[in-house]
Length: 261
Length: 349
Image 1 (cartoon, chains in turn cyan, purple):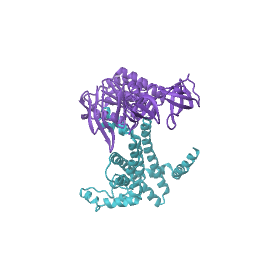
Image 2 (image 1 turned 90 degrees about the vertical axis):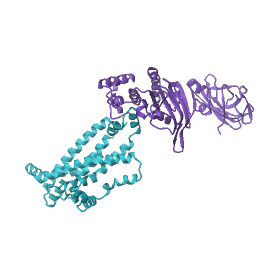
Image 3 (image 1 turned 30 degrees about the horizontal axis):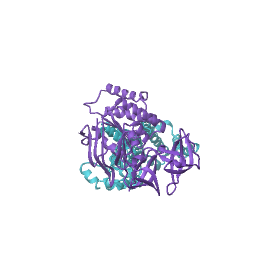
Image 4 (image 1 turned 135 degrees about the vertical axis):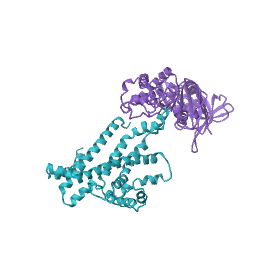
């Protein structure tokens, strides 16, 4: 117990405390000015807004993938299963380069989309695409084992009680795996907020338009404005913590009702 | 509601889980499907419920073809060994599930659903647990809730798959009695699967003994115990002493010696002599058709159990017998043994 706490402090809490101490160099007014500057606000809005959207998309996409992988037997299933892990393993810069090439105006997907008037690379839409790409395996890998372990008997009993397919999915399966779904959502969101490597390649990084908060931090650092960088970092930390906390609370409620029997 | 099972065949790959099974269950009966694991009893139950489909054969409910209907349309209550309660729902919602998923046209009003669920919870004597979640209940309580949930849809048939299999011995016994009483109250045609002979004999009106996908015998508990039709039934139900014998011209031979027993019309050839442990009388050395030396004696409750090495057999065969405690036995005693009742079955090829 004591050991665990010591480790947790060393690895997690001390670096975080350092962040706050750095910020303490600023007066509250200075801090407020940095945080509420137009560029910072836009970057934060972009980061969190797109991350939430991307996490939600990953959730839907991920659930579809999980369902296919768990419930159906099709040729190439194992290969498909392995492919899901690629975004985990791929250096994020590689993912960024690949996605940029794909969605650039002459790219395989970029060209037909451009014909439709949709521009993906070097716009916020590109950031969103990159975030979905790197975050959806988290949903798959958290939900998959839980759905796999869900007893077939639960569905059978529901059917024998007269439930149709819709009722089985909505009233039995989804609530049973809700805690895992929420964990997947939280992880996907955390990953998307923190993503840097793949996003900066495809984003175009125009201030106020397609500049994410982590990038702004790096820019401030390269300008030796350390206090500015940490101020933005503190806001990101607080906001991320808030989102994760809320998801956690919802999950706790779901779990309190449905602990493993 | 009668259930008629006609000539059902179910294969899993090359393995025949059910091999031409016929069975008729009358209205209001409580029938046990008894057999070792792999005998096909659960598969048969699942086919009747509509959770599995047969390769051949017919299932009829009151003469009506049940195979035309899916599991949801058959109005069959199914209770699983591991309860399969919805853990994200309260006890109340679990029981109400079958009522809430009905098509809107026939669905009861909220008030009627509440009343029905409360009636059912009263029936299983667990109304005080209505707001709890399944994880807060004991195994016995969970199984009773599972039963209440199955009864909510007013099933025409109740099917229970090893309903007491996951419970400890004491709770099991209580629940067994309780199920018996409940059945006397509600009289719904019921079929339950068990591998526990005591459970089957104690609870059921009739017992169906199964082995290797076939029905070995159907009868009342007394019939299957006292008059087993096959060697399997004799060995599976109750404790039996089995001796390899040979029947020749109406005489029974054990090794080289001729036992002074009537062959009971058994055909000539290698056979097996079955005797219940308590049907083996113990007396002075020359009193019986068999002779043996007592090796070990244990006493518990009203019986005395002894390991006896049969010396009259060619080799030494060790058998276990039960005798009343007033007939004292000690290791080293040489005794005569006489089967009061016995059955002879042809040895399996």
